[in-house]
Length: 300
Image 1 (spheres, rainbow, N blue to C red):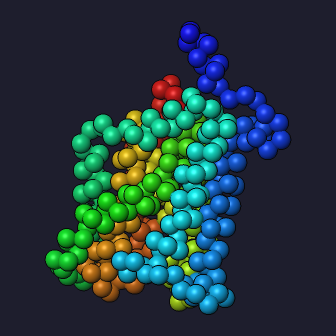
Image 2 (cartoon, rainbow, N blue to C red):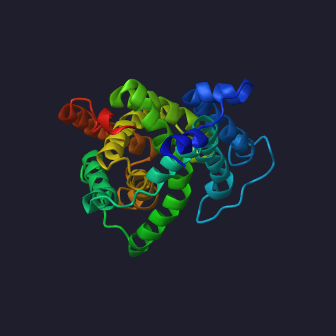
Image 3 (cartoon, helix red, strand yellow):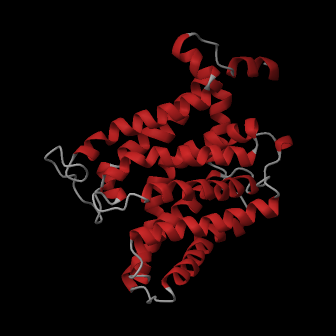
């Protein structure tokens, strides 16, 4: 079998109707499907006592949080499942192989792993010291011992659920069409939008959260999307490093932040993340001249 014949067999057959629409508009289809699947799955969580309280039921707490049963199923049904479905329909076996290649690209320079695993906590400590006026305390031994297991758990939950969709599926297509900077700006608000229903649950601090939190979270997602795009491109589109970068932030904030900076509440924490990520994003935009490590000639 020749290469041309193999490529022809791998290419999806052009369809009509919904399948044809997905083939013609894979990005739009992905974002719509990711939101639809996650939001439907999150509806019981939002209506339960963990959210609006319409439904007289409380999701069980595991490791001190109801998110594993309330939020995680919808997260798995959203970005990663939508990326798999749309890739299979729009790009066929060839597209699935390329999607999977980035998913398993572990072999990159060790410095990128150091940045994700060690650099993120160090940066967050500096950020916390700045916003707390130096009012910090040493983390407890329990917190220190929980960081590594927490990172692995976050990798298998948040990392796997989200990043095969946002970075592995969406970023290559967005930057191939609009460029890296415009693609990151497009993805950021859409990434934030996917989370919005969760602001009506414990995840978003309901009912005590300040109304500004979704706004600061959106700006954070836009800035962090720029950072994630730069790391994704500079590592040769390695999804594992991008996943580690994402979950390293989540892990430190959820486990160590309040223990080290007890005076910084949820609103101030979100504000610190927004400002810190915005400063880093601006530095990256200046140093890369907006290219964010993207090289169109290398393909998407």
